[in-house]
Image 1 (cartoon, rainbow, N blue to C red):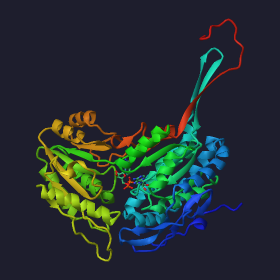
Image 2 (image 1 turned 180 degrees about the horizontal axis):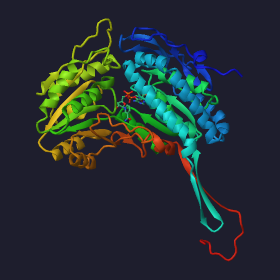
Image 3 (image 1 turned 120 degrees about the horizontal axis):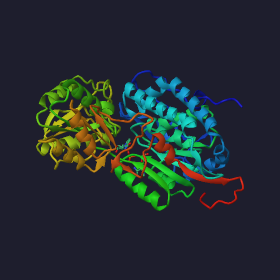
Image 4 (image 1 turned 90 degrees about the vertical axis):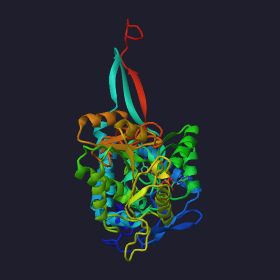
Length: 504
Ligand code: NAD
């Protein structure tokens, strides 16, 4: 059989820059074939930089999920018995393919999502790290065994769950799916991905890359659709575990729905990440780090620092942030917002905070980029935000950084902890004592000291607390592997024992 390469399965994206270019129709990938939605329905895929369609994506009804489940079911019996080391070979090949196609894929991701080329490199680069982690499971995921009594051995193995699924957001079209897929496949499962239809090409390119890497057909499938396709995944009796990454209301709803059906659910949600800044913080490090964190990916990152709690007088740091923000070139250093509606929603938060008395230190409203009539909001800095303002506690998910003020460190910690979210948080200080005081008290799953985006790199796991995550375990690292597998304990006795008690 001739191996199917990425380029034989999908058209390659030709631009090596931000110019507008049309691209293919994204179709479902089921059982090793591209398929249309059974209804024939499609929707436009918009390039957010230009605000016009660059292609189409199919819109599947819930019934198409069942077609994918049947393909997965047919392929699963063989795959679940493939040894871990052989599964790892698929991961090694996938890593090479993603590295080979990195440049072309990053320009495509930039076109569908709006992020800059450099940010897209971060998306794919971190995704590759997750593939590396999964490949290493062949060496590190040994269960364990001991003789629990004379002649009696107990052994722990990690067994597949069967058919599992992932539902992913628009902001990291390759990385977030690969938080889940490699660990789930290494666990011997078949996987169904439902990507965000706003950015369908990441999932489509993953399907082609995974096919070229040699995964048996039917073990990885992609279905695009709306709410009914998601419901069909969560409700399907043959899908036993679901990973979700997206906004909190959907995460919470799906978690409850799936858990009631007895499924394993891990649903990551929204965020509001506080950066506590004290007067001894290094001026340059703090200002550059916070500007990069707040405005990278136009603030459309669940780990972006979105709000500073200034303890005492940190005005020089705020002034330096304004200087640095003025240097950001919209369209080059910062991309657009995913949709027009989101851009409007973000501007609404700025208007509202201003009308309630906040001070706009840098205003991104009305920003434009010549030749690109897309969904733009420029970097915005709002000072004197108070708890009554929705901008202080709701997720804005745009390039808007807010500043609140506290008199003491403990007041700042209380303010941060009053957020319903607990994804990430950070402190900026040169004092080990201050850093430790905050580290021990901030209710977040991922904490940074002088780090704007404290995303744990593999093998450390990614996951937040409170309303930022429903279900136990984190989504990457060893937790991810444990989420997608179940532990079997096998107790064996082969020698006949005489004269012992049942516990000897
Ligand atoms: P979203 O919740 O709108 O969509 C996520 C996925 O759910 C998509 O596949 C979408 O098609 C589907 N979906 C949307 N509404 C649905 C509904 N009512 N019923 C069923 N399915 C539905 O999120 P988004 O706008 O794509 O992504 C941004 C959000 O994701 C932000 O809140 C961000 O904080 C969050 N996010 C969180 C993490 C994390 O690790 N905690 C990572 C990335 C993004």
